[in-house]
Image (cartoon, one colour):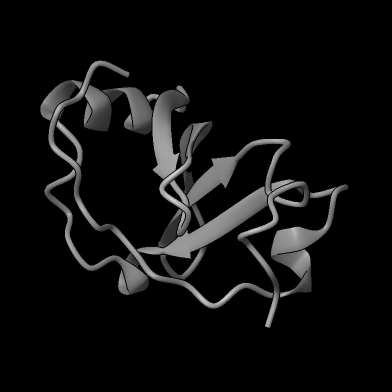
Length: 96
């Protein structure tokens, strides 16, 4: 996580499935991504090889949380998957 450029990737409305402690994941459809220039070539190759990469989530409070970032190929489109155990614990992240 030695990156220096912050990039807005998505602003997403959260639902119960995002805040469920048993799931602890946030699904991001490729169609929802605002900018695809947040990954370098090495990171793209890692994701294509089904490897997770560590990243930093900046919450509305500007608190930083370490996350695991993955790429899942689905039937109709691909999605990014953010996993961490802290989504339900955060006081700033709430479902709609």
